[in-house]
Image (tube, helix red, strand yellow):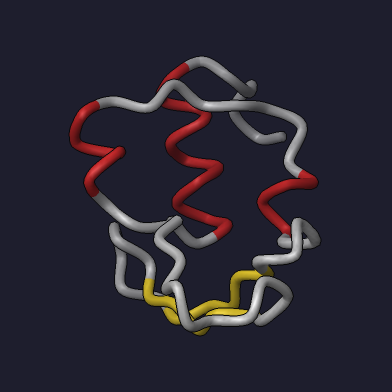
Length: 72
């Protein structure tokens, strides 16, 4: 997640998924929906250069990495 130095720490960001282009909101205060996900993904070089993923794409990436079982 890239944070602008002039952006308040508790501001929400309007983002577009780096994978599918779906618009979503990210909570910079640590209350973002992604922080509540029960898995952690390995960051590849490609992923580290991209911004956030939407909930659907993040879950698909977790399944692909074996971090979560399909259908969960």
